Image 1: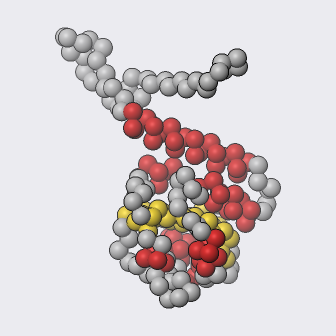
Image 2: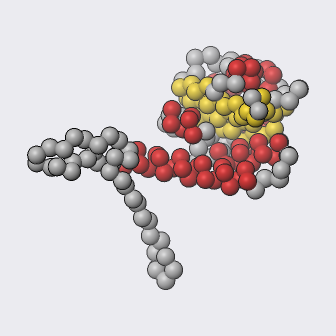
Length: 193
């Protein structure tokens, strides 16, 4: 608030908003489930991500699909995912953006042909998202220029591959990696994305 020396945070929790109302008891006629702070925080974080993505997409020049993919990738990189790879599915498929932990890793993966990534081609074909925790197939995202599986080289512990569709046609694919000790993508995060 203006005139205040420090920022103020207001948290509003509605009874029953995050869970089912408990039946009334004699001791507590208005008893409800207490909202879980961790669940509320995760929900708020996802809402912030959706707001940031909406703002980015609404401010991107109309008609420039590759620019839209790049902007979406920038929003998701860092706080939400360690790696963000954006591919345009127009024939031929093209890698539009790679945001990685280092510029060297981004450059190496940017040179990869998206058609050589079974996960990307399968998501393009089916139009269905894929959420994997501890991916079983190390070659699911192809190999780097030295011939090592990308998922192994990047130490991917969780991935999310999402089709971007319009009018029933997949126009692009966003692939996100979380690496190392970072928590895996949740079903709620997959749904929000």
